[in-house]
Length: 278
Ligand SMILES: [Zn+2]
Image (cartoon, rainbow, N blue to C red; front, side, top):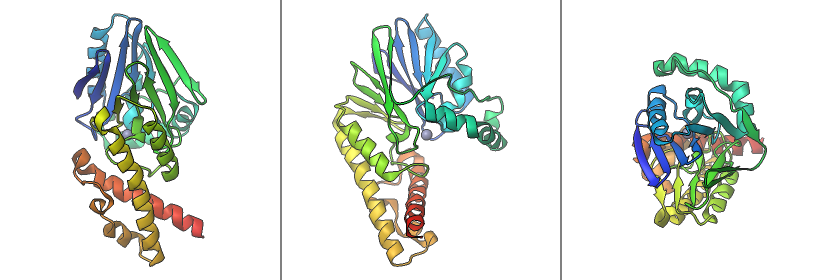
């Protein structure tokens, strides 16, 4: 796990074990707020050890940005904290969490000890947390998944964006147009930094360019898949005939994982378009 200090009291922890997934923390004089909890207990414990030493008031709240395993499996290790999420996130975790965890355990021995811990504080649309001298604004950021939320740190102007911002936009479980709307809204926020759900922290100077590229990519893949469907290209061929490089992105980010994300994105758009046509 890699630890990075973004501002005086804001930290980002990046997994070295799984897809550069991130977690974060805002340390205040009344205690700490954690954003997402990493998938593997070993790295989550490292983060907890660091944070417990950082504040005598302990960890008060854990926020889940969405229900995906790599952002919530560490929840159970934060025994002293309340876990906060949007209503939809808790609902999805309640319905499918145990089944998914059992499947994940069968594949990944490192998860053997993990128990599912659901959020115990939920909110419908927005929530503001006042803790110490900090104000955190939680807001919907849908698109990657329908239940996505972001955490805006007032003052520092940092947004923990969850997977609504990634080195490649990822919509396999989500909605392309909704994510574009979210990315446009983020662009209007006049931020200093974005903590992506995976990969490097984005700096002020690169925000507009990065968000514009993501929005354009989502248009490009839509147009390209639509054109391939018009010429009756099969799903299997289409995925090979629209390489990531042809959509404005390098295939090396996230240790090459972006190539897989791209293929899933293409399949998602194919499914959406062919379902509509039927
Ligand atoms: Zn993720």
